[in-house]
Image (cartoon, rainbow over all chains, first blue to last red; front, top):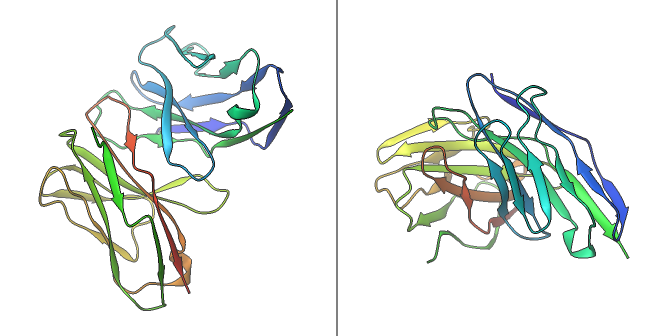
Length: 113
Length: 111
């Protein structure tokens, strides 16, 4: 079946550091890929998405590129801020759209000033 | 544009009590989902629905029931509350092949 594997957290960075959160997936067909962010005490919000190979999703300085050859969708940001402290979830939607999104276990990011 | 609305936001139950967590969406989404998120953990799918009148079990359905009589509403029922059901519950909805939209969650404690 489809699955998503994220790097284990927590990740602690200093402000302005470079961020990478790894995400790899297993899927049949041509899935769509998503990153969601959950700030403390809130629900999940869509951060970015990519629907086909080589697409780059971007939002709020975050980027992720859909790499079919390595089945990856790593999240990156060049300079993190304290306000980026949150839990980040990688997710996959299969090509049919009929089955629920498959989520990774989440990676907690803490950014310190 | 309200999106996905969950009520109540907080609730404390005694063991053995029952309650219904409400979820409604105004985006005409056909797919709706219920998840639970335990402290420090990821999401676990409880039930989902692909349209009015159709529901299916997710990963952790035991102790819960759902119904989907309308496109807009997808209530989650706990019949006999147990301490293991203490969690944060999230409802979500989407159109096919589109991102899921999440509600703000219901924080449930069972004592």
